[in-house]
Amino acid sequence: YYTEATPNNVGQLRCLNTHIFPVRYNDGFYKDVISENNKDITKMVYVSDMLVGAICCRFEAGKKGQLRRVYIMTFGVLKAYRNYGIGSKMLNGLIDTVDKLDDVSDIYLHVQTSNDEAIEFYKKFDFTVTGKKENYYRNIDPPHCYVLSRPSKGSTGGNGGNGGEDESKAGSANGGTTEAK
Image 1 (cartoon, rainbow, N blue to C red):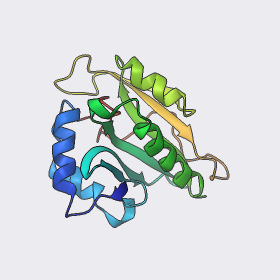
Image 2 (tube, rainbow, N blue to C red; image 1 turned 90 degrees about the vertical axis):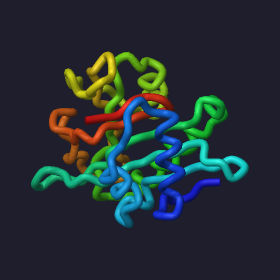
Image 3 (tube, one colour; image 1 turned 180 degrees about the vertical axis):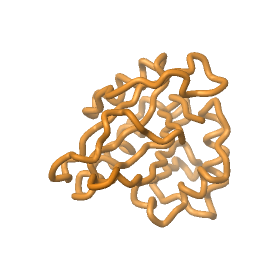
């Protein structure tokens, strides 16, 4: 089943992220995750009452005069539960939610340049590489990432994206992708 991240289950999310990702996220990350503003775009999935995956996103204000954006901070599924459609269902749920919003230009994230599996996964959902950031990650080799983006079908002009140039440093991941500064 799918549920929101709350103060009551965020400890489980912290544990899941420790198992999936090569970095540790700070308290600010988890405050973003449980923020009321982000509850519709952050979901956790349980199988037999065990947390097996999560997609954690936040809304970001667009530059002056532009639509806001959705940033995928982390997105992962425990290895034993991959290839069962859990990640696809979570990402499709996010896309469906964002496509119903008329004030969001796109969904974007960072993916480590060596993570071909993640890049191909996102391409199946109409994400494209819109930029590359050198030395984005600390203590991860390679430290470089691609910026991937998918326009929202709900936006009227798609004028919120910035071509991958000025994204947040919060980091992102996919079923083992990576994260951040």
